[in-house]
Structure formats: structure tokens, C-alpha cells
Length: 477
Ligand code: BGP
Image (tube, rainbow, N blue to C red; front, side, top):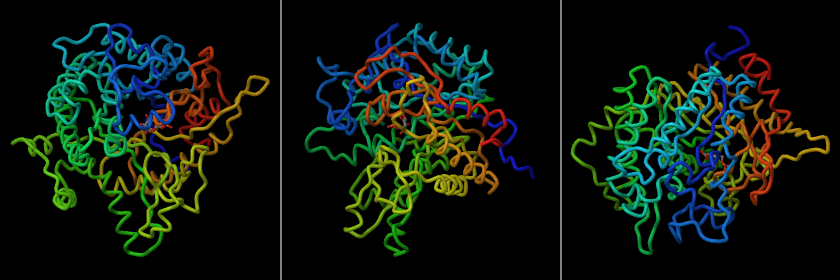
């Protein structure tokens, strides 16, 4: 075996989401979406968990998605830079509200369809494979107002129409698809993951798991339609992954860590194995939840299993049953996690754990025995531009080097991994905070948290580093 463990046709690249890059939030007929109502700061968090004040943007608030990094108008320039780095793949999402502005329109919006046609053509022109997420955190606001979003079964049918429309339109251009971004986020940020808004007295857990069932059925229907319309396509799921360590070897801690992981695996167990796991049924019973299912749902789930497991990995988590330890909650991602004393943290408090990446990849492959696709990984940091106009992001290189090396080890462990698209190859709006300051890119974008800046693009030090990684197929880290 050579030193290089990456397969010859490994899909190196980067990953973006429509609402975090495009801007042009009402251009060419696009409808308003959930993310368009999310400002920055504490208010963003309140909305993300379902405390929504208004279904219209409020005067005096700054909404980062409205302009984002103006990818809608600048994608050609950006794709040329990705091509210069040698990207083999770019993960993007389609904004549902560009295709169906209200989500339930009779006819799709041609201008929206055309935008993605042009985007995919531009990628293909540079030999870059489009990898498309059908839903990445943005639900047309009309669906939230009219139906209560994913709590309503109606969304299943509307999502199926939307999916079939884009499969049919892009069948010759897109061969890699993904249904819901970080589907398990529905439990943590219900407005972000599923457009859920709660009223006083709502049984949140009941609503969340009912919405989850609807997304799982919608995902299965999309998988089925994709296989029918584009027989040579691959369609996957997408999990916000990162294993949970027990704080000690006390069996109570170990059991709790397993339960935490299962909270997330639940979704993928259904999407990949095609049925509700026994532990989920027990959880519903213990918590007095009744999930309404239609006759035929079980068969749909069984027939709509995914081809590959897409996942994001930023860091691991840890949990404990000791109330004292539980007080040491780290701010890492949206998953409450106790501080792991063995790990360093990012500026935003996210644990950094490359070994955990290898463990997580092994865990997922052991569990599902399907190819894995790493569709998000990276370090959010506040980069500084030097007086000479350079951005020396050695800390980012360091993070990525260790994680790519860990992925190489996982491949040597026998884990099948088909690609790696690092998160935000160009700086974009942060999903959790709405900040521009939290940057992941190899390419710097001149824009700040308040929306000031030229939007000009500049290469960071990591640009040439990643170029060499791709050139050498992961050999030259
Ligand atoms: C994931 C999301 C992305 C993304 C990333 C980084 O949860 O799929 O949309 O933004 O995390 O998170 P953040 O932007 O909050 O740093």
C-alpha cells in the first residue's frame, strides 16, 4: 500500500449553503425564507429555537442572509478560484423559495431554475462535480405561516413536488444529492432545521418528532424519485456528527453517552436502514409521544434508503451523569457538551478533536456499512488582514491538516470515504451566530458583522496549501 490512502477519484472540494452565500434574497422572484428572518446576536438564537416574533423582517434589524457574500452575482469569480485550487466537487444547496417562492405554488419559478442551471454549467465547465443539498436550513416562510411548516403532513407532498422538479430539471448535470442538511438539527434548532415555531403550552418534543417523521418520509420519497428520474445518481442523508464520549468509565456515563449518540443516529437509522429502531419506539412510549403515521409509511421508509452517509464533523462531544461535571458545559456547536479536559477549543469554544473524526468515521461505517461522504469540516476563526494585505491562517491549516490526516487513517482502517468538502471554502455568514467574523475560508471576503465592506475576495495562506493537498491527492499535508 502506498502512503497515500485516498482513492484516485476522491471528491476534494468545499461546501456552501444557499442562504449563507447567495444574498439577492428577494431577487428574480425568490420568496422569503426562515433564515431571512434571522438577524445576528442573541435574537438569532431565540428565533433559531422557535421563538419567532414576526414573519416579516423588522425595521432596524440587520439580516445577514439578505446580501450574504453576494454569491448570486459573483459565483463565476468564486468558482474560478475554486477551480484554481483544483476542486473536484462543490457542495451547494438549492433554495426552495427560488424554485417555489411560496413553497406551494402550482408552477415553479423559471428565473430561479435558470440560476441553478447557470451555476451547475459553470461548475461543470471547470470540471467540478456539483453536490446538491435539497434543503439546507431554509423553509419558504409562507409554509411556516400557512401550515406550521414540518409539523404538518402537507409539507411531505410539497417537498416531493419540489424534489421531483429539481431532479427532472438537473438530471443531466447533478449526480450527487442530499436530502436534509444536518437532519438531527431539528431537535436542537427547530426553526432552523424545520421551520418550527412554538406557542405557549405546546408539547415541543411531540411536535419535533412528528416533524421528524414527516422529514423522514419526505426524504424517503425524494430518494425513490431520484433513483427513478436519475438512475445513475447517488443520494445521501446528512448528519451533524461527532461522537459523544462518556466523561468516565462509570457505566451510567457510558450509557448516557450512548443515548446522546442515539438521539442523532435515530434519523440516520431510519434513512439508512429503513425502519424505526427499537430504542426510538421505547423513547416515544416512555415520553408519552404518539407519532402519527399513515398506512404505507413503513413501506416508503423501507424503499427509500439512502446510497451514502453524508456528515459534518467539527468536533466531538462529552457527557456525564455527575451534576458537578455537568455544570462545565462548553459552548461547542449547538450540542450541549461537557468540557473535555483533553481537548483544545476554537475561539468560539468548539472542541478540536482530529482523533474523534477518525473514531466518528469508523463508528458510522461500522453502523451503516455504506460509503461515507464528509460534506463539512473546518475551523471558524476571526482572521486578520496584515498591513501587507496577507491573511496568515496557519491555525486553519493546522486544524485541516490534522483532520485530513485522521480521515486518511480512517480510510486505512477500512472505512469507505468518497469525498471531503470542507465547510465554507470562501468566507460566508455563520449559521449559528450570523456573524461574518467567524470565517472558515481559503478565500477572504471583505465584509464585517454589520454588513460593511467591499465584498472583494482575497486568497489566504491556506489557499495554496489546500491546492497542494488536492494536487497530491492528500499526500502533501
Ligand atoms: C453546520 C451547518 C452549516 C454551518 C456549519 C458551521 O451546522 O450545516 O450551515 O454554518 O455548521 O457553523 P457556524 O456557521 O455556526 O460556524
